[in-house]
Length: 179
Image 1 (cartoon, rainbow, N blue to C red):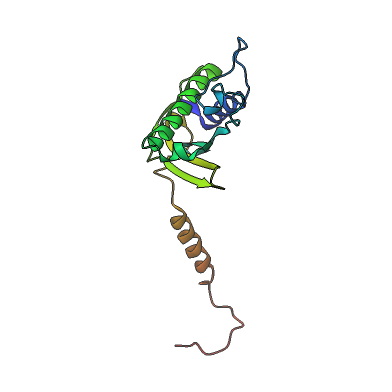
Image 2 (image 1 turned 30 degrees about the horizontal axis):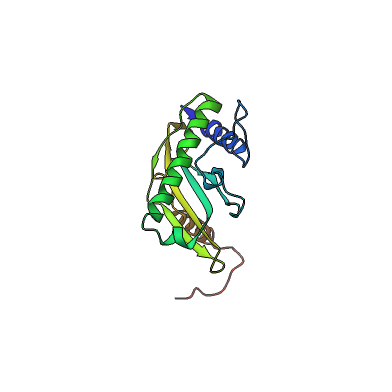
């Protein structure tokens, strides 16, 4: 079992080695599965896309952002293609994590993919997608299911604050009690 710090450092190293234009040990470009890795003709604009990861408790969120054309957006397989992009990124992270740390990164999907498509003009559009994965085999972390919710924490703090006002009556208070 790995600690949270070891997992976070391993994933951080994978991301540090995955910048646009990065090369592997043999001097070949690293292939993650992003659109920017495909050869483009001189007339086409540069494809902009990338990914990132956030960790919270035992949940890793893989995020993808990329430019899309109107033709791609209107394709009936657009959502499944975006989901496949997230799966390719996760596969790359797992493979590189094993290479960097020598351990396997075991995770399973935790919920559905979240996707947002926005446009700035009739020509430029972009997609932002993310998916959460539960990491198994981490020591020293409260599971995301066992962690108290924000409402539970707030309720406890309010109760503690209100309890401070229920102390003994001061000796210098001489007024009649109300009620």
